[in-house]
View 1 (cartoon, rainbow, N blue to C red):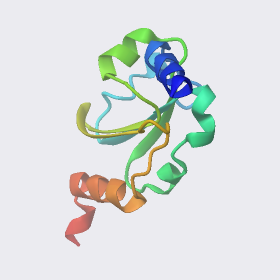
View 2 (view 1 turned 90 degrees about the vertical axis):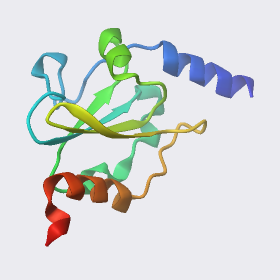
View 3 (view 1 turned 135 degrees about the vertical axis):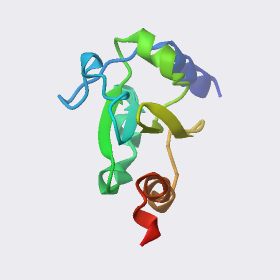
Length: 124
């Protein structure tokens, strides 16, 4: 239990940065038009990244690693990792958060269904 408490403390007290060249704070990816999914995680938890994210269709997908930008972590209310947030035209539509195991177990179909609802892809 003490290990879980320590991991939660680290998760909540770290700051946010964006790496891998796909997401930078000055790019303002959240507020762009259309459907955007941002996968927030921490490097210490990278083995628990939501691997199904690359299979999502009809959404712009970015990864955000919490390390150096505390203001965005606070602004987006990231409380645990991994967290996936679905945005449409800069507004949060849905959020999925990892539990105490620091894993995200949401089925791919659930995330894709939410994207399809926003893009109208499910109307065909």
